[in-house]
Length: 265
Ligand code: F6R
Image (tube, rainbow, N blue to C red; front, top):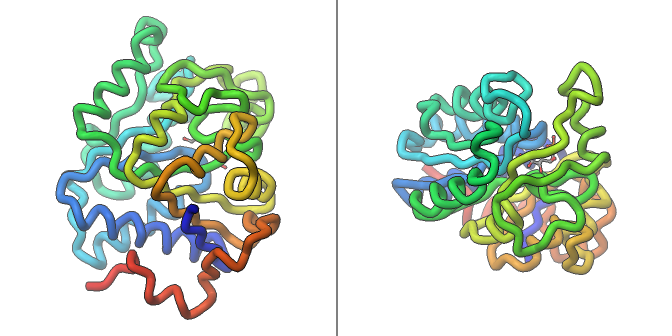
């Protein structure tokens, strides 16, 4: 069962997630981190930077792999995941841009992009820790409902709900790409540790389905139940529909201090 941490706010949840991630990074000099795009992890990336500085944790040997990228946007397009991660992750953490790897989405690369990306992950020794958000429809990466739980990195089609949810980043809703290259669910499950973050009422039902529902391709996020090491960070709103609250950790309770992944100097 996942370790589920319910914090009183998204700010507290983000800071705790950053601590859990840095705790792992500190334990392995050459660490490979899987990174998610979207709104959810942005504050956590800032917390990673400030806590790494506070605790003197070196990030220069970090290797990062994106979960996914839109097909049809240039990597330099500000709406691409490549640009968003350079801005919200690479720059914020003071990394070299070459430390981030994003799936290739140029038309000429599409047939081999998934295989090539998986090869580079393997060449880096596999992903030590994968950061995940979740879509309001339960997607992880851009593995939409119906995706095989064994899927690998490939071209995927975006669901209408996802295109609507992401339309805020585009001038016209028709401009939202129809496809992505996304790590598959099988690929994601090979990371040694999964850290899922979800905030806000919009994620409430996806979180209940992912954590407490049946394991089914109808909710790709439910695949986390197949993984032996998962940590989930929620705020109260996203946790609202969870039934088994007795099994989860409330970050407002004192027991948080004794968790094994809290940072100490
Ligand atoms: C991002 C990704 C998506 C997002 C999800 C939540 O790389 O693969 O699965 O994590 O759509 O997006 P936000 O965080 O914007 O709510």
